[in-house]
Image (cartoon, rainbow, N blue to C red; front, side, top):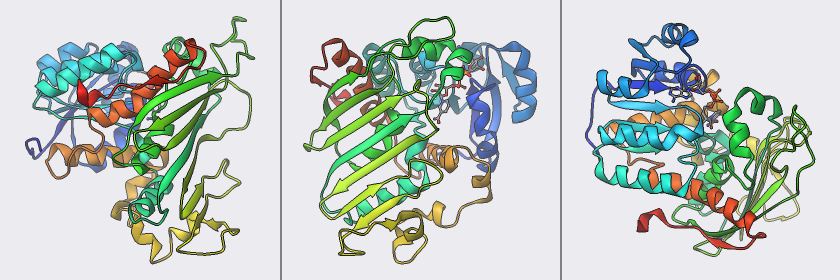
Length: 374
Ligand SMILES: NC(=O)c1ccc[n+]([C@@H]2O[C@H](COP(=O)([O-])OP(=O)(O)OC[C@H]3O[C@@H](n4cnc5c(N)ncnc54)[C@H](O)[C@@H]3O)[C@@H](O)[C@H]2O)c1
């Protein structure tokens, strides 16, 4: 484990947008807001005041070189994540990077190299893993209540056409076919299948049925990636950010020999679970939200979710933004091993990059490199 520090001084880059979402959590965790950085000069001073930062920079390298930082939180567009992480790691500054870790295999390799040579830790901020239902399922799997887990589905179905216009970098990344943003679906599933990784993927899409405001077709609409893991498990990921439909965002399913889970697909539904050890009648779903409130099952939730701090009322993404940051701080202090280190981050990122190659090869199965071998 890396060296412990008392008061952690953090710099947030991409602070004017996503980075600012972490303000309440940063304050609750008593982190020193040493600096904010954003290339949008117009909002930089407002952002500095809102986040209570000591200094503001419009240049990331300058922030790294002139400000005494222990850690950076990278919340810039995905195209900057890897290079900004590498720059921090080279200076032994700890990194919490927004998803995804990188946008090319070459960048993934650079990240691993920098991580190996650095004294600092790297963590990817995959917050959906930390959401309460996903943590409950993880606890149940670890306790063996699903039996042998062998199948899972994850979906990111989030109509974002307006956001694609506001953030052209997203439009650019989504002009490539495949699954450019797999971590919110794959992340929780891999956290349930701990010790396993995706070895090969194949990917196809349903074509393009929607036009952007300039009349140009989007790269594709619904994309499905199938993944086989080292332990021979099957995972299906669906990704769609342009199809018109009611909001549902992230959906999950898990199947084991002794249990099954289906998350709610809208706020009008409930998460459903069947566990042989709770009810042997395999025709009856239980309400997972109710089950997680009842002893002895509630004990499968981590302590933070059983006695939630006040900040969880404000922390974004169902509290995931708070817990991801809390674990990052704990890992810097040496209290826990880094929970989403470079290799775990790449386990969630690389299948998406390879899916883009598969789709260009008529959906052929393709091997996903294991960054631990690099
Ligand atoms: N984990 C989640 O739930 C979640 C949710 C939303 C966004 N994100 C991630 O957060 C990141 C940012 O998303 P967003 O929607 O806020 O994007 P955005 O484009 O709205 O905001 C990015 C910000 O970064 C600034 N910026 C751009 N390039 C910069 C640079 N080189 N140096 C400093 N600042 C720079 C921009 O001025 C802008 O304020 C993305 O990687 C996205 O994938 C994650």
